[in-house]
Length: 399
Image (cartoon, helix red, strand yellow):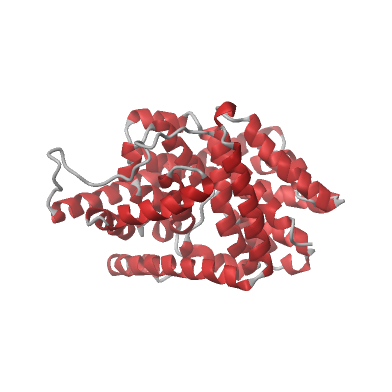
C-alpha cells in the first residue's frame, strides 16, 4: 500500500509543477519524461550499487579541495576566524568566493570555462532537452553552492534574458556545496546524502521546466565569452582586480540580505507567538507539509514527524534537522530514513532566498532583479518540489 502511495505522490508532485506552471503549453513533455526515466534509473543505481556513489563522492572531494585552498587565504588574514571548532556562515560559505570567483573568471578569460560549459552543457542538453547553460549550471550549483555558482556565472547571467535568470534563481534553491558534504555524512546516512546530489540535479531541471518553461532559440543558446567594447579583452591584471573587488562587493550584499531575511522570519515568529506561544512558522509549515509527507509512503506517525522536520528545515536549515535526528536516525525504518535524508539534502529554506536575491542584486541589472524579486514564491516552491521529488524517487527503492 505504501509503495502505491509513494508512486501516487510522485505523480502529484509533478502535477503541482504543472498546476503552477507559468506556461503550460510551453512544457516539453518528452523532455520531462526522459528526465523522469533518467532519475528512476539513478535512484535505483545509486541505492543499489556503491560505484555510483563513489563517483559523486570523488567529484565532491575535488570541489571541497578547492574550498579548502580558499581557507588558506582566509587563514592568512583572519586566523581567528578559521581556527575554531565551527566556522561561522560568512567564513565557511561567503569568504571562499574571494578565491572561487577570480579563479573561474580567469578560466573564462583564457577560454577554458566557456569550452567546458559548451561541451558538458551540450551533452546534458542532448539528454534533458534543455538549454546548454541551464544544464551545466544544474551540475555546477550542486557542488559549488548557489552563491558561488551564480557568482562564477555572472558573465552569462548578464547576457541571457530575465526569464532564464528566473530559471537559474529557482534552480539555486536546490543546491548544496561540496565543502559541507563531509559534515552531512558525519550526521546522516552517507549513501542517501550522495544519492540525493545527482538526483537533485535532474529534478531541478524537471521542476523549472514545469514551473517556468522557456523557449530558447538556437542563436540564444550560446556560452558567454569575455570581450570589451572594441572586441578586445582588457589587460589581465586590470580584469583580475575588478574580479576580486566584485567578489568582495558580492559578499557584502549577500551577507546583508541573509541577515535581513533571517531577522524578518524571526520577527514574524515573535508576532505569531503573541497570539499563541505554540504558533511559529515552523509549526505552521509542519501542518501544511503533512499531506506531502504522507505522499512519500509513510505511515501516519512517521508522516507527522516527517512534516515537522520539513517545517523546521524550511524555516531554519538542514543542519538543525540533522542535529535533532543524528542520534536516533539508526532506529528509523529504512524507508523513513531514506526519504528524510534525501529531503533535507539541499539549501531550500527562507535564508537561501535572501542569499540568492542578494547575489543577483550584485550581478545583474534592475530589470532582471525585478524579475527575480517577483518570483520569490516560485523560488521557494521550486526548492520544495525538488526535495519532494528526490525523496519520492529514492523512496521507491528503499523499504
